[in-house]
Image (cartoon, rainbow, N blue to C red; front, side, top):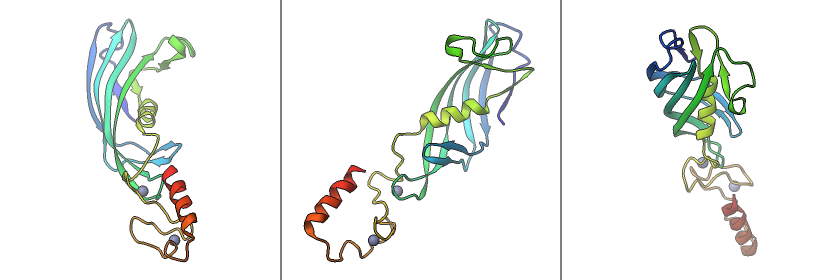
Length: 171
Ligand SMILES: [Zn+2]
Ligand SMILES: [Zn+2]
């Protein structure tokens, strides 16, 4: 849970809270599998009372640990994402531009869900441990970054080898 105490600003339009937080983050599920965090994330920015609503503009930075899409090894990926949210304590659900207001109650803002959203938005389409990751052998499953397997040297028809290369490069 990442909680911000907003008691000082929530009733004072124009008031701003400067944010500079380091916090541990629980794993987040993505379409690429689980994203976890070995070190704290950092959120810097501002939380401003704009006409009674609290506008968060910030920058989230850190390092995510995630599985390579090609060889499945875990690797560390630097993350950087902008955060832009509006929190409202008096709005009703679904109101606002596109129903985009996040509701809150009391003096404490829990921004965990929005941090998770920012993490997901920062993930690239392709997650590779390195640009030239060689992946796993399709036949025996050997991680070709670490060792060569014997599949490729076994009597492979050269025409099939060309095809295999094409398929591999297309991944
Ligand atoms: Zn890889
Ligand atoms: Zn192999």
